[in-house]
Image 1: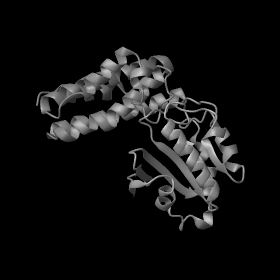
Image 2: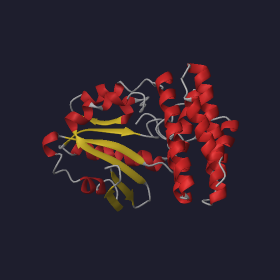
Image 3: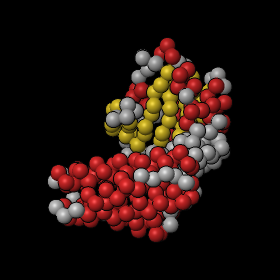
Image 4: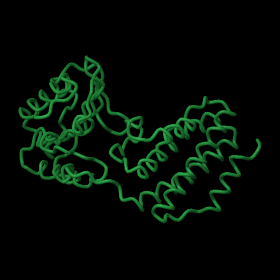
Length: 277
């Protein structure tokens, strides 16, 4: 490894994974992704990788048994996204995609714009055929999302989900509205904000390092929409603040990229959120 991280334990585990992968004939390739590949790993980082198993062996490859050779496991299960999630005995987390090599490696170039591997040769821990390295090199150049189409998608998402939020509030489902604000609306706002600020490096997880990546004024707007308790009056106030920020972001996108906005719909959503209850 040519670029040690700020976490020696993670560096050592990755080096050990490389050794194990080389000794496992059923593996065709191993590709790291995440904070380590971006040079952002620290003592709290996990290890994330794709394990490309030869197609004929993918059904009989025992992922937990293989990873237990990496370090003792205290937890191993398939998570909600279909990914093998593990916790090692030192509490380092790991996420491992175990996929058939041919279709899995073929899809890597399609990650452009979502995944960035600035040092592809470091990210590739094993490549028996050369296919994985070639594919990973196509992710070496950072490609921000296409601005106009992405801005239009996000402004539409914010209108749609905020309308749902207004309906949920009108029904009296405060807890559900609170969850919608945090888990659905806020990530779309952060993505649109990042797009407008030309700060899209953490696109897949837009809250990552936002304290460093975004201006203080944007952070203040974000905080006002997401720090309410799950009580009716507070959630309603946060929803109104959230929609005002969404509209401000949408207006900025419209000015910058000529994104068309459904102003009539926006006004009606505002009316629902401002209506007495």
